[in-house]
Amino acid sequence: MTARLFLLTLSGLVPVMLLPSWPTALIVAGAIVLAALVDFFLVPRVHDLALQRTPGPKVRLGDDTHSVLTLINGSPRVLRLEVRDAWTPSAGAVQTRSRHVLSAGERAQVRTELRPVRRGALAADLVTVRSRSPLGLIARQKSIEVPADIRVLPPFVSRRELPSKTQKLRELEGRSAVMIRGMGTEFDSLREYVDGDDVRSIDWRASARASDLVVKTWRPEKDRRVVIVVDSSRLAARRCGEGTVFDAALESSLLLTALATGAGDRVDVIVADARVRAVASSRRAHDPVHDLSVTLTPVHPELYDADWEAITAAVLATTRQQALVVVITALDETTVAEDILPVLPTLTAHHRVVLAGVEDPALAELAGARGDVEEIYTAAAAESELLTAASLRTRLRGLGIASVQAPPDDLPGALADHYIRLKVTGRL
Image: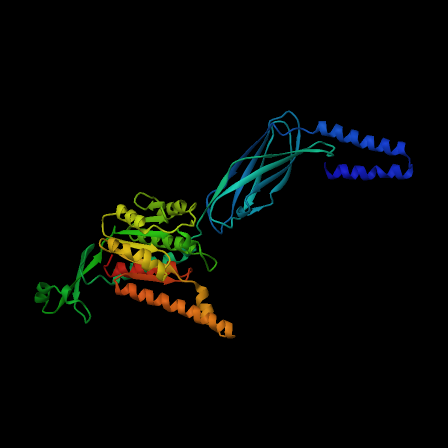
């Protein structure tokens, strides 16, 4: 029943009030019921209405997209329709309702603007169609399932740092060649010895000819291997800043992939917890960052503990060549001591390992509060956490394992800077 039927009923009270009697009331009520019944049989059914959804292109979180709903009237009658193109709330659909009058065989398109607020594959909900007659007293309504979804890729906000990091890498590689020839370097040039140069880099024959000390320099080779391990266990689901630890890990892996592939290195990414969730490689990818984004789109942290033995086996199966293995996980004392340290010798025997973790920015804020007694105790607890994290990094450095820890917005850049330092010093 529609609002028109309600208004018709209200208007029927006028003759009843002017001629208050049972016969008048029965006549008015009968007329209204008869009009409603006639209108009900005049309403066209929507069984012959064909629906098709065409989702828009993949977008990154923070960008807008759209979906097009096509209506095709396959019946011989005119359809007066009200349509609701519903989507899951996280898709951020705008203006989902519309009205259409379709003649026999006519088609119409409904464009629904979408402003996603969550990463992943966001599914469409039911399409609800309401058909009305010319009188509009009674309507037929049906909800129809029209499958479709939109793909929302990780935001990759840190891509704004990529030009500066790439330029920095090129400048350092061109200005400073490595002094110690190690695995994966190629001869670059000779230059005069300066204080601080390693004596092992002195070319004695060239020095004898030049009557001065001359050192060899080597340029880092291209096509080195970088393996990025992203922990997707329950620890990655923790809120940190405006997102989760896993979100910051994805940003870091995307920026490092873009920087390393731009420098000519091959990058493999493994996302794992109790099992390997996703694997991506730049070996045959035309656009490694885009392919990695598509691979990571449906992956979310799960409430499992990470199986570090299985993760280590996956890394060793990925490459036999010496590589830089970047493990992005929770750098807390218990996790590192009980789960990660026992498997690290297996990795460090073949690869250079870097542990990276997200630092909670709220700890620094809590450590700086001194308003009252409660805030002082809270600040002491936060300061204790910060000291424990610093102590853990020191112990890892003593074991010969580099670590990078920074707030979620700064971690991608910090990890990229560490890669640049390794690259220009010939340690990668």
